[in-house]
Length: 246
Image (cartoon, rainbow, N blue to C red):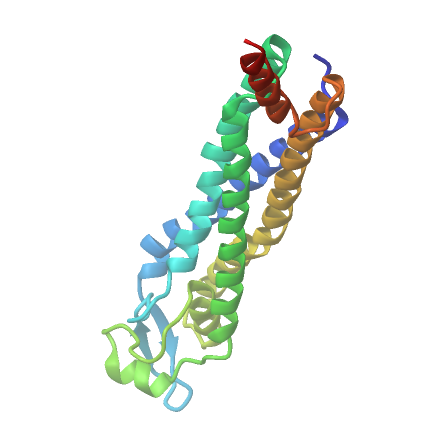
């Protein structure tokens, strides 16, 4: 059975979503590696008043990471359930249409998965942007940081992006630390920005999958000469008529 234009568009959208999901996972993994590596180690900070310096712990006492876990979950779902599940669902769908003239049950399940995956991505997008914007205007109090060192900075809750932006705004003793933070902040902002095309691609794929499902079911109804949804009622009426005659 020849593929429809919608089916071809599904393949393209599915591949693009897979690529974007891989990018998302890679960027988030890079941030996690930084948090467990250099980002978790102290930064030497020069005080403005005396010119002395102290070690600022690499992470604050209250670091928010749930939005990163949500984004990671959305990326993993996009790769495992949507991409690999989609490849299997589309193969079974072509096979079922060619052999039995109907849709595969797995295609219905995959259509539901695309909806749930898009909702998860949308949740990650909203959660990440709201959380980041809520803490974006926070600054590190040098006096408090110095007095509590070497304990983690105790005031406020911070996203990784907001924390390392605030750290980079301080007068760090080593210029290499500024360069490192600028690079890592680009990556952290990258996975936040990437949620926008990720969400759009998920929405496009979801719509295409549902439209293709409806298109095939309507075309199937036309081929049988009955409006879609009437075949079952017609079959029941025919059975009852035959029973009454008997």
